[in-house]
Each structure stands twice: as C-alpha cells, then as structure tokens.
Length: 97
Image (cartoon, rainbow, N blue to C red; front, side):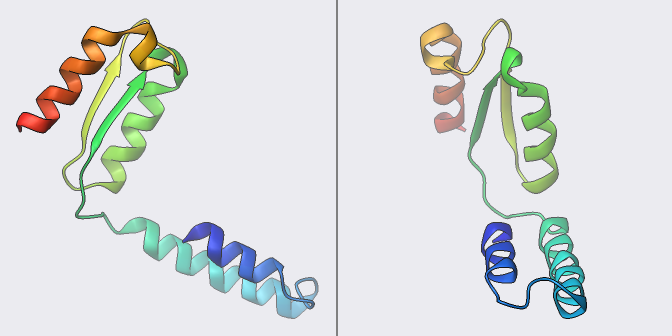
C-alpha cells in the first residue's frame, strides 16, 4: 500500500510545488495510520542472523498480532541451504501450531 500511495503521489504532473508538498504530507499521515495498525494475519518469519534477522524480527513483531519469528544463528540470506535442519524444524513447528 505504501508503494501504491507513493507512486500515485509522484506520478502526477504537479508533484512538485506547494500542492505536491501538501499531498505528500497528507499521504505520509495516511501511511503512518496504516502502519500503526497490527495485521490479524500470521506467517512464519524465518531469517538468518547474518542477514538482518533481528531487524526483521522486530519489524514483524510490531506489525503482526501473532508473529512467529525464528532467527537462525550463523545463517545469512540462503537459510535453507545454509541451515537446512533448523529451517525445516522452524517450518514444521509453525505448521504444527
């Protein structure tokens, strides 16, 4: 939604100038309101500690009501290749819960 609102804002011919600034501030307020609400959806959040895993854990915890996040130590972006057993265990725990 953020990308859609931003692209609509900047695709207008009068994006620059006072009117564009007003629309930008108004759109920013809309985005803040949407982002402040937690989503009633859940999904497994599995990330590697070497690939900003803690950052994504905080982000998912703030945006989802029932966030289930696992950060795998000594793992980067390629979680299944780098840490197959722990990745599979985390997915199975999510499916069983």
